[in-house]
Length: 403
Ligand SMILES: Cc1cc2nc3c(=O)[nH]c(=O)nc-3n(C[C@H](O)[C@H](O)[C@H](O)COP(=O)(O)OP(=O)(O)OC[C@H]3O[C@@H](n4cnc5c(N)ncnc54)[C@H](O)[C@@H]3O)c2cc1C
Image 1 (spheres, rainbow, N blue to C red):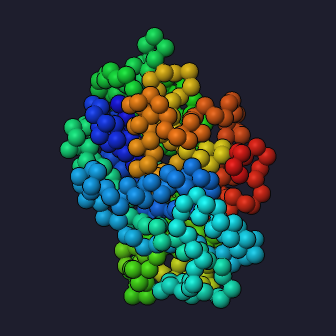
Image 2: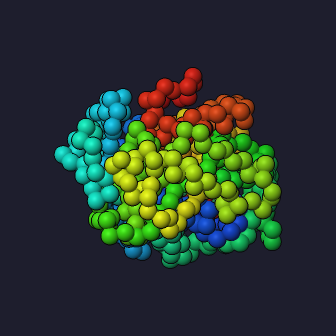
Image 3: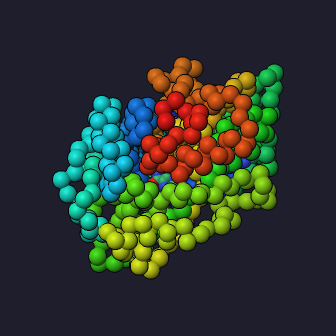
């Protein structure tokens, strides 16, 4: 039983179905309609620690071979990516990432050039070339592929049906209650994205994540952009860029992000109700305007956003919920939940179906933090968001062992 048909819920459901389990996914709105359908679709092999590198690279492999193991085609742009630094501190940081990512198995090299149709270098950049990186042009295509693959294996995805209760019987989560019915299940996976805490709360459990707004824009098409160009991440500006629909996608990580607690919103709150602020993206685009003027000047064709679930140490929150057997969680996306979903779903399904954690996965279990107040949870989550490309930027006290 999976609650939420975003990338994490659908991937977990698909992998449980592949393992021969009977699976029902219940989704309050429509599949992929919240964070997953609004993602930039970027997959990134360079990560801040070995476990995340392994999961990110596994997801890249799973995306490239999706048709082989899931039986459904998945369109993928094998673009590669550039990580670009323009300050001394960020040059040093990228040099460190080069060494450690190679040690952890990623194919990363010093880039011989940084010139792109949409990025004219100043000349003093230091850049890494990451040939393994890719993107999925329209995030809905991953959702559609997972839905089709689930359908082939008999997994049921019930849309427009909200979970309103999680009954606990003899100390175990025993299924879900929706607005319309009760469904008994020995395993319940909370994959409710920005609502993961509210859903866990239905069973009296607590999941340590803080939802934070993230936005991107896509410019109108322009002949200036070569659609075959790679992804570029300007790490000192915390900005990412890629070709999209004939224009340029511009997103980034502002230093003063906005936490959004669905508990403080009306009960029907969905991503469509979340206020967007183009000013945030304009400011980020301004930081790369010298090299990428089109990011600042081209008319905007689409502006979208949704919720990240940030955790106190920037790592996924995935595994069994402490003190409540039968309840599992797939969350703590920290901005990488779309791209890591294929590996996270695979690992979580293996954990659930074999009752044995795959190597390294206990480090992501939701019980690892101990008690935290909401204020601490939010402030650490905001710090992780603001340092997405820049975890070297002065870790807060107790931000986590790897930061
Ligand atoms: C603008 C933007 C760009 C991003 N870019 C990237 C990127 O390039 N790469 C990357 O890896 N990640 C990216 N992300 C992050 C990524 O989108 C998320 O990490 C990922 O989609 C999270 O998936 P999810 O399944 O946890 O959440 P969601 O997709 O939000 O799915 C959760 C689902 O649970 C449902 N739900 C909630 N409550 C209930 C209930 N009571 N009953 C039933 N269903 C319920 C919701 O309706 C929702 O559909 C981006 C996010 C945003 C907003």
